[in-house]
Length: 417
Image: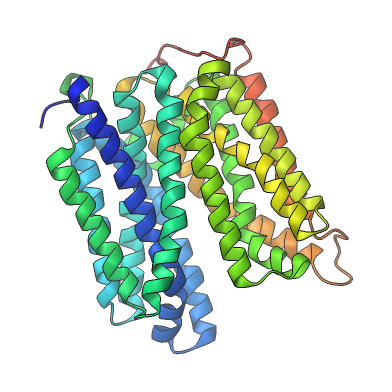
């Protein structure tokens, strides 16, 4: 398959977006039925809770360990074979879970899923290969919009299929990944020229070795810190939102689901439609800071909102938070060479995995200390207020860490190896 040229670029971008959409949709499809299936196989609500926690930890651990490996393999062998193998592995993962006869086989499926879902690192690296530095924020915004679309559609489809059978969503997810593989096999060109590839090294491919890349340049380290804080603050939703909405506003499961779909829709609009024009006008740096600041404002308003309608209103300024992620990614890609893009994305994914382990535990604890009568923390919205402070800190670090770029257009040489 030839390298990406001008005539192949649109097809390549389309495949990356379709792959991102199908991957997220395939994972979202199983959300409504995974816990009931665990309970069915465990034959005990108590053990189902334990197994569910184990599965979450297994998936996050595999992401942490394997993201740098997947990224480094793409730096060595090219993006195309790694993306295709990852998508095929994800199809096999869902097929295994569709027929899993026991909890242990389901656990193997979750491990395989954590490994193969690390293909996201290669998708981001591919986008860096085929877009100019000044256009990367828009490209990453499109990937983010595809993620959001999959996040909205997946659970809705999974819930409908789950009415037929607890196994049906897994078959559907496997089929979607199979379609993505066939589409990519015939459409996707390679994006990384052989002369720009880097020899594979376990020293760089392990998560701690990959993170050394983030320390290779002071501004890269600062942006990595901003990235970690963004992930950390974002997990306030996965950790406490459902409990918080039910306790404070009395929302039902249907209302919470509808609001999550609305959140995904707003994020899709922000990243898919607004990132490009805003970056073109203000530059990556200013767009990143604006996104972080509005995210902080939105979270603070959510924490203080005395009614459900005011909480919903706060979602609109909070949606501008979606401007931050693609611009952080774009700024970071300019500080490494083309042969290190996969390693960079692997390191970023490991950073996100660490935040994904720590943050839910932290915010879950904060919520437990603030909910109910006689709680040690007197305000039930404390978790959202702390998340707002975390984003405000991220904005300050981002502003200081890229201070010499007052024009918002960064283009640094790669750090020395």
